[in-house]
Image (cartoon, rainbow, N blue to C red):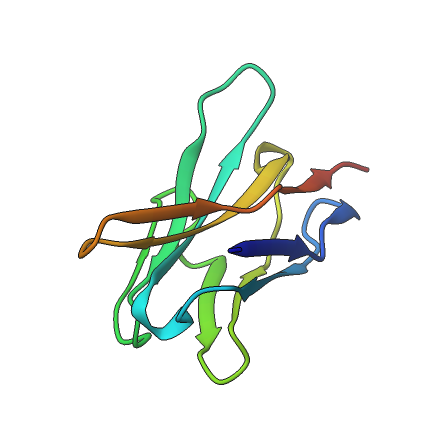
Length: 118
């Protein structure tokens, strides 16, 4: 049974930092590209950052470039999202996703709330 468990969310002031973690189990982690999505109230879920299975290539939404960093540790089956210079607009539920193409597989975590407010 595949499980993705996010942690690290919470309440932070504008300009602050948070580090999200996603622990994966039940899958061969190194075979999966990993990504972080977020969904704010009343909005569609959007891609925040992604990283290839070996960690060599990363991709970011324009809105978070230069502020967020995605990384992974294949030995620990973990993926991280370091979020700096947080803005109120970053408030959302953040989800971890694992995906592979051959065969097609996609798994989602349950999400962790990030609230940026003074």
